[in-house]
Length: 258
Image 1 (cartoon, rainbow, N blue to C red):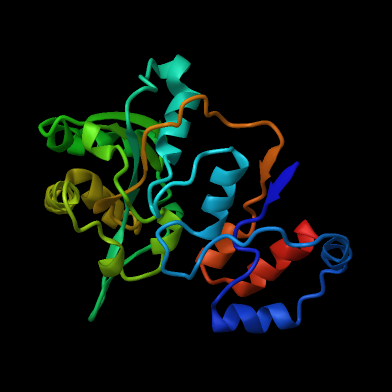
Image 2 (tube, rainbow, N blue to C red):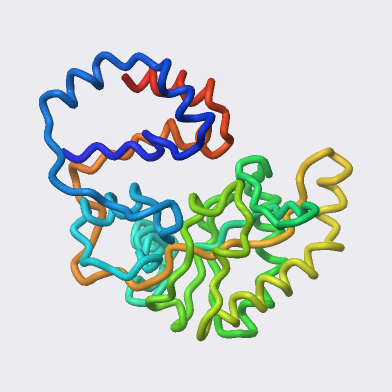
C-alpha cells in the first residue's frame, strides 16, 4: 500500500512557522515505526514536484527526465473507452488558467479560482480549438479544468507540472527549446484570442477572473503495460490550502488527516 500525501511539508517561511505549532500525534507514532528508504526530488525548481515523482514510481513507470512524466496519457487511458481515445499516442494536459499581470512579473493564479463549470469550459475550449487543430493537435475535454491534447511533438516534451507554477512567476517555467517554441506561440495566440472573447466579458461582469491562457503539462506517451496500479492512494487535501498559502486551513487539513 502506497499512501502519497502531496504538500505534507513546505518551503514557505510562513508555512514552516505554522508547522512548528502543529501537533500530529498519530503521524509521530507512525513515523517512529517507519524508516526512509528513498528520497525523491532535488529542489523546489525541479519541473516535477516530489509527489508527482512518487506517484510515477508507485505506478512502476520507468525513470523519466525531469518534466516528462506522462500524466496526461494516464488520464487519456482512463477515459479511452468512454471517449474513443487512442492511448498509443502521446498526450499533454491543457489547463485553462488566469495569468495575473503584476508590476514586475506574470503569475499563474490557482485554477480553481476560475470556478469553471462544464459549459464555460467547453466554450473556452471551442474558442481555442482552431488554433491547436491548425497545428495538428486534437483536443478533448476531460473535466472543466482538464483538456487533453494529442500531438506527436508531445512525446517526451519536458514541461513544468501545474503545482510547480501556481502562485509563481511563469517566466522560469515556460518551455523554451525545440518544439516548445510552438507551445509558447500557441499560448500567446490563446491570450490574444481570449482577451476580447465574449465569455470573458460575461465573467468580468460577474466579478470572476477571466480565462486568459492555458498551461501545458504532463506530456508524453504511456509506458508499455502501464496503468493505474491498485494499492496507490493519493490524499491531496493539503494541496489547495498549501498552494493558496492559507496556512490555517493547511493546519486544519493536517489535523484531519492525522
